Length: 138
Image 1 (cartoon, helix red, strand yellow):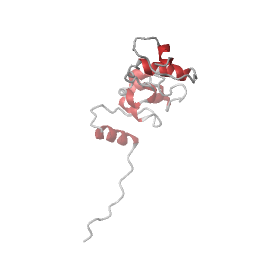
Image 2 (cartoon, one colour):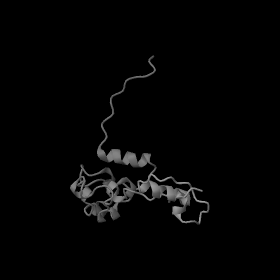
Image 3 (cartoon, rainbow, N blue to C red):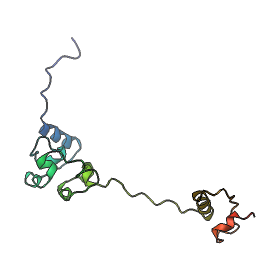
Image 4 (tube, rainbow, N blue to C red):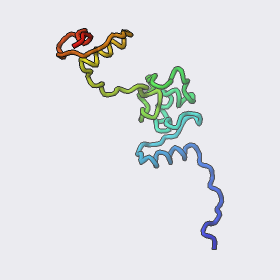
């Protein structure tokens, strides 16, 4: 007896079934309402059908990339349940932790490099000294 037997190919899932499966696989308890337009983004199905009329990508199909591009945050984003999955509804750049504060020596070196200077930086004897002291031979 063969270990594997051939079975009939499964029927192709509808977009609604796929979206429902995505929600179940993600462990989501969000309600799937269905989409008004088949060409609308999949996340539209999680917005109440009445409200979908207020969200252009759900009512008119895929958004205009320029007008509703990443980070544009149009006003209809307030109806999107998970803004992190909709490029138009979340910022393109995120804030990062501030950089460590530069030492006086590093600042003076950076000043010299920015000025295109070929002067030699010797370092300062005291951190409180003016930055130009670092260019005087110790």
